Amino acid sequence: MSKQLPSRERMYKALITKDASFEGIFIVGVKSTGIFCLPTCPARNPMLKNVEFFSTSKDALYSGYRPCKRCKPLKANGETPKWIDTILQKVEEDLTRKWTDEEIEEMDINPNRLRRWFKKHHGTTFHGYVRLRRLGNALGQIKHGENATQVAYDHGYNSLSGFREAMKELTGKPVKKGKDTTVIHINRITTPLGPMLVGTTNEALCLLEFIDRRMLETQLQRLQKYYNCTFVPGSNEITELTANEIAEYFDGDRQEFTVPLDVPGSDFQQQVWNELKTIPYGKTRSYKEQAIAIGNLKAIRAVATANGDNRIAIIIPCHRVIGSDGSLTGYGGGLWRKKYLLNLERSNLKEITESNGQRSMW
Ligand SMILES: [Zn+2]
Image 1 (cartoon, rainbow, N blue to C red):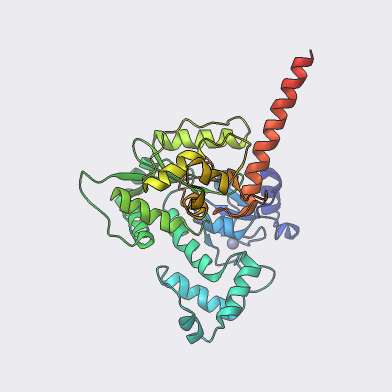
Image 2: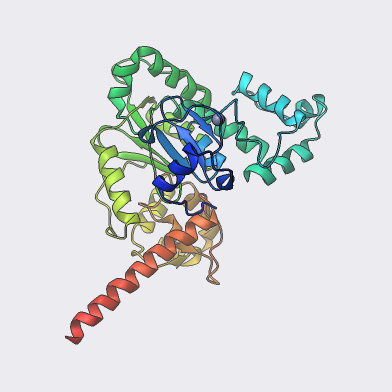
């Protein structure tokens, strides 16, 4: 779970004084080099405008940063064991490699021990780590905070083709060429719950998902299938609108969204997603109630699956569906996020009701 970070100024001060008491508190990403470091890294101090702070190395990886070779930020509390170093090196040599337990054993590494090490130190599995390095590699091509087309102009065709190559590795399909191909702009936005990936056509938003979500690669593959599209790093008006509305939502200043959506899927999925949009801000419904609402009480399981297949997190509010007993049950983006979103909406509603009540007293 993400934790609250100290102020930017405080962390920057800790960074330039190499204050060891901040180890474990923050990780710093250096935009100009694309590398992330520990607070005490012996490398030269970056400028304040070039740094981005994260609470965990996982967040830095998801944002496309590579671990620094000098301070080795992946070694949480002490040296990385040699066997971990060996396999990390292999991972970097070929990010597309899909690791089987047999291959891991061939390196004299116990797959269970490997899993436990990654869980303990990085809160993710080994395969989760490989996935996020692959994604980080693709997303790293999108310069931090830079606008899309700008990226292509500034860095030439090479960076664009690098991105396409990386996306091809993710989606497993050759890149389409030709004028009829739909272009999906891919960019990332930051939120209090971690970075999200935004995918937009020229007309609508078609993807909004937390970057560490396991389903993300599958969702990108589905988009490719539905649109027969090519992915391009960057943003357009729809991206900007999405970024603004999501920021307002997290600030508690927005309850409804105006971004146009395009969500190709089966008739059933469409029905489920449309029904989700009718759940009011700050309210919840059970899967059963959702199944009844679409006129098929028996479809509870299918409703839950279609919920999980939602590609537009937050805006199509699948987080507002809970178990019949009131338990939060599953959420693709992680239960802690679901809890955060529901709390945000409820406390904001309460505030609005209270301030209205006060006004009526006058
Ligand atoms: Zn470093």
